Length: 150
Image 1 (cartoon, one colour):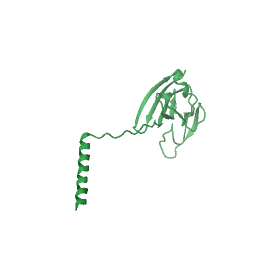
Image 2 (tube, helix red, strand yellow):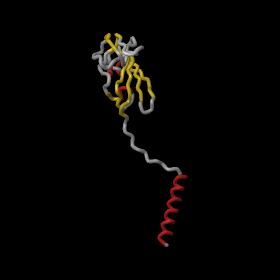
Image 3 (cartoon, one colour):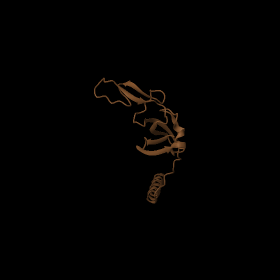
Image 4 (tube, rainbow, N blue to C red):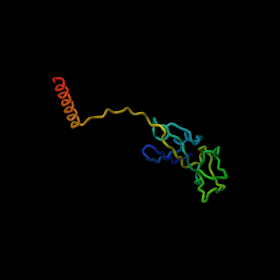
C-alpha cells in the first residue's frame, strides 16, 4: 500500500510542515497530477486548498511536469527540475519520474494556495488610547465653540 511523506508549504509565512500519510489516508493522492489543486482535508488542513508542486520516487528521482504518466523515463534535459548544468548550453540524458502520483512515489511537495476567509476583527482600543481620543474630541469642541462665539 502507499505511504507518502507530504511536505506542505505556506508561502505567506515561509514555513512548511511534514506529514506522513499511510494506506487509506494516502489513497486520495494516487492518480493525481502535478499542478492539481485539491482539498486540504487530505493533509489535515480543512477548508484550505493545496496545490501539488512536485515529489520524488523511492529511488530519489524527481517528478517532472512535462513527462506524462507515472513512469520513469530517461530524457534529454537542458534545464529545469532534475538537472543542474555545469556549463552553459549543456544537455544531458537524465532519469526523471512522470507527473502522476503512483505507489512508487515517496515524497509529495504541496503549497497552500487558498486559506479560509476569516472575519476581520474590530480593533480593540486600549484604555490609554480612549482617554487620548476623548481629550482630543473635547479640545476640538472647545475650539469650535470659541470660534462660534467670536
